Length: 85
Image (cartoon, rainbow, N blue to C red; front, top):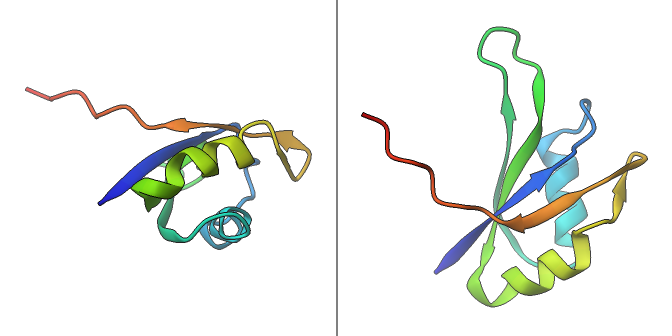
């Protein structure tokens, strides 16, 4: 089973590969995505990293508050997406 982690306060120029590499130093990364604006294609400053259940707490502890390109990351377990009607 996997858990999804929310990663906020990302530098605008961060790529998915750079984000995955930062987390891979601590845990095995299953997938990674940075959310972009639909109209401009620019990063919205946050993304999601998917890790194994057993690694989730370790990843949050290791990465929350660390700096990436001069910006402190906010990392926590992602909340379920609200249902759309």
